[in-house]
Image (cartoon, rainbow, N blue to C red; front, side, top):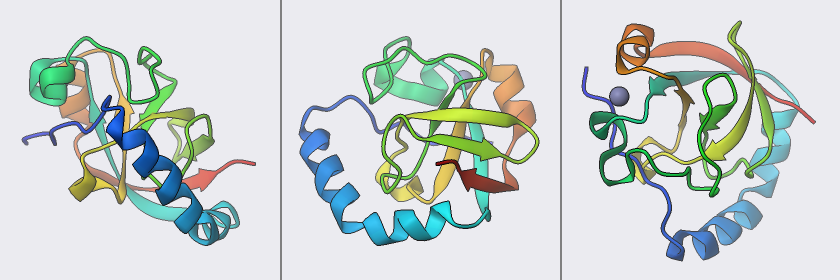
Length: 128
Ligand SMILES: [Zn+2]
């Protein structure tokens, strides 16, 4: 399975980010009130997963860490904690390419692990 190209890092996106957060505040509140089934995929630092951003920091400027970092829709602010299925609690630190903005992408250490994870539909709860 080809993993999606990454959308991260561009300073230009920060303005976008703020605007998007404001516009989707209502959606964010709705999301925090209930667990939703969302598409969850996984990525690693390799070129296939992250393209030109391979080995670099996440869109939030923080270096990604397995077990912590998740890329989430732009409606969910950086630093938000989300519980994903039985995988545990992650921190929103990254973004996906715009066309994948409706999914969650969990950071993993190796491409093999990310590939093996595949694409799942899991309950995602945004924590207060
Ligand atoms: Zn990879």
